[in-house]
Image (cartoon, rainbow, N blue to C red; front, side, top):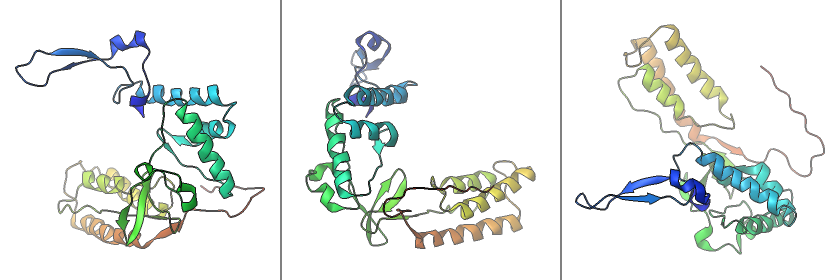
Length: 247
């Protein structure tokens, strides 16, 4: 995404790199012409250019512009609609408005194959096998588009020497942005909190009782592979939604 955003000519003097192909070759200086990953401003510039495109072309593509403003996550878009016709309209306007900025959406995927009939094969998402299903990663979450369900695939750590550092690494593997497995992640975080209270150093071996608790937790993590959760929470046109939070 970043490489598709051109830098202002006046700013390119500040985006220079040194390069040579061989150790005995003279070093050359190049000016970068596009936004480059790794610079502090890269994320802002690319996202701002996307929003600017929505503002400039919004009168011609109102549905596409609205979708860009509300449903993009850096260079990923995750959206939907109540009917296939609405979804086709979103797709049509998204492709049209983004092409105005030289941006081509790729890795298309949907739980309705008819939406993808006119998408070239090379622009569709590539699937991988999990539990004998064709699944993809959607914003880091494993999704089976045919069944329209989310999965969890956890690779538990195998360190025999368990420390506070390895416990933290185990928690980091539990990627759950939707909070669907909070009952599991909360247990892990409470255990880490306990290690902090006992003042263990990062690489200090845990006593046998705590070590065994951690081993048991890792063994039970494999049960998450058996869970599948329906993506769609509501069916049909909903007129009113209430959100109740408890803490």
